[in-house]
Amino acid sequence: MKSTLAILATAATLAAAAGTAQAATVVTGLNDTLDATPMHYAGHCPGVITFHGTVVVSGHIDPGGVAEIGYQFTRSDGATGQNQYIEAHHTGVYHITETWTLGGPQLHDYAGWEKFKAWPTADIQNKTGNTWSNEARFTLKCGG
Image (tube, rainbow, N blue to C red; front, top):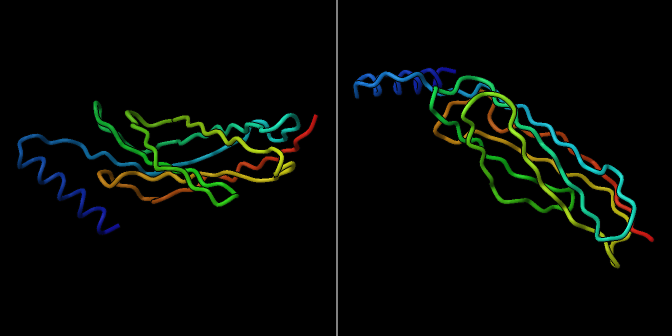
């Protein structure tokens, strides 16, 4: 807390010295959720599971400003996706989507999950750090 206040005070001092007093952009929380569609796939393979996520940004974003929020998906098979980014122009809900195509001659049945983590970029303050979504669980059964 002491370092956050020091950083905000330094930013305010620098802005005032430059002749442009600006309110600081502060993200006080990220709340992440993820769902799998369908949760239970049965059919011809490969099958496609689509993950629908939300990142809820709370705090303050300056009018006309932007807070960059990073996110990355992780799967039960050990794969990790590339870092992706949301440009948040306001607090509220932001939607993200990911797909996973799997199943075939070598893989007939699978039970797995996917989740993601979200974090603010270094240019904004955040009291919560990285946050993880829930694990969106699903099953896949290949057949007829």
